[in-house]
Length: 395
Image (cartoon, rainbow, N blue to C red; front, side, top):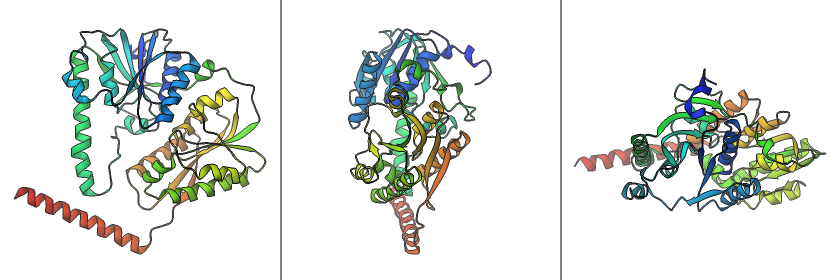
């Protein structure tokens, strides 16, 4: 924690606060903030993505279980154009009553737009975590989800990144003009990341268990934190069937390593892979699809994880903080040809190692000579096509 950070207005105790969140994990961070900052007057605003039905239901289930109300918006309800055109709706003439706004995803301009409806004219705005992306944000690195290839990257930069930054800056400008103090402050579990750009207040995840009625502790178990296999395979630039093969090998090794223990596989909320449940059946593992965040579920169920495994999941760090005695292992797919996601996963790996999480390296097969040549040819072809297009634009 930075010197005298507790004296900053955005970290004051008891300030009426509004939490704009888009995921179950962001709700967990909000609950920690409510306890840490002694907030009694608060409002939750849920922003739901139509494509993530399971995640949306997890958020609603948490609200029901923990007995708090919330406003709900769909991401398709409001666009940036709506925000600019309908100043009668998105106006500070209709003052909100919350003096502090917590934004659950630093990169979500949509949440900044909605904050106009809830912020008082003297409100302070700050951020909570959306997962491992906080590491890059705190380090001052932009979200690096660019496509591969020079041509695609230039198109992405012009049509996606620059547009997103323009929209974000315009929304922040309107907030500032209305008197809202838009800080670069974070309530974060990644408080040991070195940063000169943000003011940090650490989230130690120490209050969550106080809000949950836990069952009596059961036998110690092995927990496997599943990935959204299709998306994770795409991020690693491998086929989903290849990731399935890796997953099968990892699960088989775990069953052999912990032959006498109960093993529970908890799939990612967005995972739709149909083969992993069969893997679990064959290996006598329990496949449990849950309706809550894994951190919340394990505390409520009374399970005592002794070993925890997974692919770069945010939950690995959270569970290590909550169940400090557990041995946590991060599966890292090592490849020769990297991309922006590979670099990000590597940063996560290093950070996890600094926080007591072991790395289990999975060697991905090296590309053949023909694959190397094909990649080189494709890159050279892309460069020449881009140059040719630029020359035609000049003419």
